Amino acid sequence: MSNQILPYRQLTRKELEKAEIIEEAREIIKEGLGPICDNCLGRQFAKIGSGVSNAKRGKILREVLIEKGEGVEEGKCWVCNGLFENLEEWVSRALEKLKECEFDSFLVGTKVSGMLLENEELMWEIAGASYAEPLKAELNREIGKRIERETGKIANFERPNLVVLLNLWTEKVELQVNSVFIYGRYRKFKRGLPQTRWLCRECRGRGCEHCNYTGKMYPESVEELISSSILAAFKGEYTVLHGCGREDIDARMLGSGRPFVVEIKEPRRRKVDLRMLEDKVREENKGKVEVVGLQYVKREMVAKIKNAKADKAYRVGVEIKPKVPEKDLENALDTLNGAVIEQRTPTRVLHRRADMVRRRKVHSAKLISFEEPVFFMEIRCDGGLYIKELISGDGGRTKPNLSELLGTEVEAEEKELDVVDVFLFEHELKNFLLAQVFLL
Image (cartoon, rainbow, N blue to C red):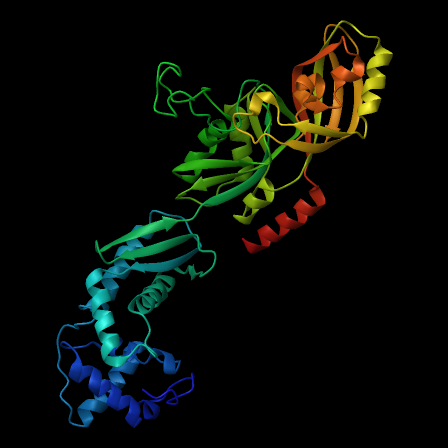
C-alpha cells in the first residue's frame, strides 16, 4: 500500500472508496483463509485515519466491494476466530470479576493465544503491517469502552488501580490489582522486636528445632503487628513494610517515630478510614507498636523513604568501668560534638555488611543523667552511624569513640538504646507528599 494514501485524520466513506484501499481490501479477502469480520478487515487500515471504528471501516469496505460485484464470503472470521462477535460475553465476565474489587480506575490487557497470533501474522503477510493495528489493542480498547460505560469508572493508562486481563488461552478474565501505599511513622515500645520478619538462620524459613518450627528468629515484628491490624481492612493478600532505615532489635523507637511506607498487596478494598486504622493498630498492639500520620501515597514514595538521608537522635544508657568523674564524661562528649567519625563496619554486622570505612558526623552529644550504674546521654548524628560502637570503640574499628576519650583503662558499654527522633527534612517531605496526594 502506498505511504501517501491518506493523512492521519477522520475518514469519510468517500475516502475509503479510493482505489488503492479497495484494491488492498479485495486482496485481503481473496488471499485470506476464509471469511473475515468487519473488525479484522477494518483493523488492517487502522493507522491511516481516525474518527472511525475498525468495525465501521470494515463494514464500509465490505459494502463497496459488494456494490462492485465482488463476492464476500460470510461466516466465522478466520483471523479472530469469532472473537469480536462475543465482545459482550467478555464484558459480562469482566464486570462479574470486577465485583470483587473496589476501584476508581482500570486498564484492560490481553494474553493472546498462539492460534490468534499465528492468524494475525498470516494476515500481515497478506496485507502488510504498516497500517494495521494489533488485535489485542483493538480488543483492549473496545472492552475498555464498554466497562467505562457500565461502571462509570475511567480507563487509566499510567496509574490504574487494577488491570482487567483477558486470558484468551484459558478464556477467563483475571484481575491484576495494584498495591495500595500508605505513608506514616511508627513507634516501637518493646525491645527485642525486629522491624521486619526475620527468617531462621538455620532453616531459612522452612521450620526447624532451632526456631521451634516457626521458620523465624523472632516470634513477631513491627511489620507483622501492623499487618495483622490493617490487612483485613483492605482485604489484601499480604503487606510489605518499607522503612526509613531501621533500629536495632533491642532499641525502642520513640519520639516522632520512624517514617515508613506500608504496601498492601492485591487489595480488594482501596478506601479505608486511616484514622480508624491508627486507633486499631494502637489498641491491638498496646505496649508494642503504634502508627501515626497515616496517608495514602503513590509507589514513588517507597524510593523516597528508602533513599532518604535522615539524621537520628538517640538516648543512650552507658555503663562505664571504672567510674569516671562527671566532668571527664562531659569533656569526652564535648570532644564528640561536631566530630567526624571514621567507622569501619562493626564486627557484629560483618556477616551482612561490606567491610568498609564510613564517615559520619556527630552533630551533638550531651549528658542528661549522671546516676550510677548507668549514665544517660543524648546523641544526634548522621544516619548510618552505629551508636553502640561509638560508645565501645569496637576494638578500634570506630575512631574517635567514647571509651578511648575517657582513657586507656576505661571501658564504656551501651546498656540501653532508644531512637528518639528521625529527622527526615520534613519541609521537603511535605512538598513530596502534597504532590502524591494531587496524583491520587
